[in-house]
Length: 136
Image (cartoon, rainbow, N blue to C red; front, top):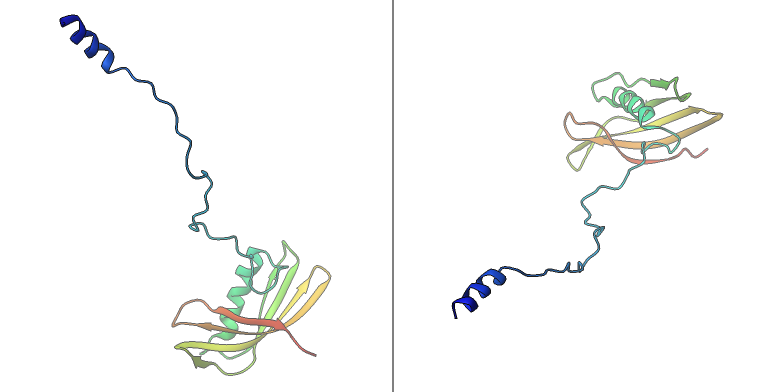
């Protein structure tokens, strides 16, 4: 009897385990990763650096307390350049300051003229609300 108890105690801790197949794939999408956005909401020709430079010029051109004159930008690395000109006075819409503008893009053997509207809340960055090719 003592042998049975000792044998049961010694072998009782031994067990075999087998891996269980997962019920779901390891690469299940969760929606926590943002999709890659275009480098520029203004034009697919612009790189992220072009847009960074253009966005600074846009802020100068659309400044509600500015003089309303044209602001230019360029990027010698890509050969793109452009300008923004306000196309009217600032106005308030949905608690945001908005302003229409004309954008001109040039470089890489092409030129575009666009009409758009940008808005911002308080001192935040301007956000493009609409951009479309200028109708002749």
